Image 1 (cartoon, rainbow, N blue to C red):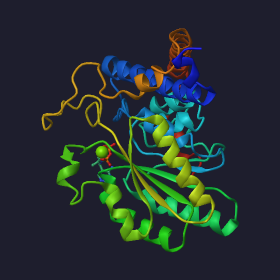
Image 2 (cartoon, protein in one colour):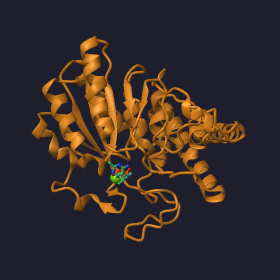
Image 3 (cartoon, protein in one colour):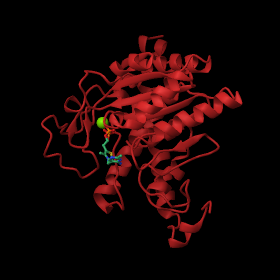
Image 4 (cartoon, rainbow, N blue to C red):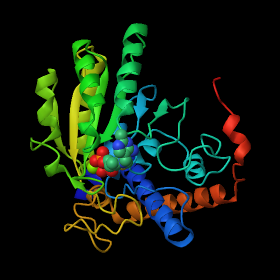
Length: 318
Ligand SMILES: Cc1ncc(C[n+]2csc(CCOP(=O)(O)OP(=O)(O)O)c2C)c(N)n1
Ligand SMILES: [Mg+2]
């Protein structure tokens, strides 16, 4: 057995399969946006797939997920079907919201406990504290995981949700994807401290900084935080350091940015980091299968009927 085979256990292969599937989905969506345009904003998550998969893979199937807007990695990792996610993006009836959403902040899957996001960044902090409070009251053993960006970490809603969650020891894990940018604003111009995680001690919770390009490391720190939350010991703030590879949205020319990533090389690429520990033939097989699955799911979504305006009145509470 060579060194590559010895480290590529089933869990590792599963992480790689998910990360590379999301990568192909990213590339397929970009191709579509470039060629056909897009009725909304596509916020690429390319390069951030590893941390999304790492963190979500540490959750249980019944745990609650509030995702952030950069890509689809969170939802794919939680088991949502590619066809449904592409359907949401393309405004098709086959989407998880039946074509009502469009864009990356409007999908949901009650069965898999993917509860959504808010178009108003930061709304999921208080909703996340809410579901965690419900779990505590019901004693259902569920943990809530809330993803957010470095920019969103400045919302007042984070501070009130973090305070309440710590005081009540709510079962919630906050996962910050610090990619250094909030639209055209640098993180260093928006934070008085080097890390978002530096704020954790003020709320009496652990603050953990982790390399967001290291999928396995993110999985490990998240697993620890999820277990802590499940034991009733309260929240943890995890900050995964990553890099925004593309513009804020696909098509953003980033005139404000000197550290633009040009070309296809992704620094510290999570796909390569996981892939280099897998024997070549196994990796190539996984890649081919993932590429095929993504292509078929995208074609199926494109072929699905478009939502018309009548769907607006579906699922309206009152
Ligand atoms: C309350 C609120 N303010 C502004 C926006 C517009 N907006 C959408 S994404 C974004 C940048 C967010 O940056 P960050 O949280 O770091 O996430 P990233 O885009 O880097 O993944 C902004 C300003 C919004 N959706 N909601
Ligand atoms: Mg950011």
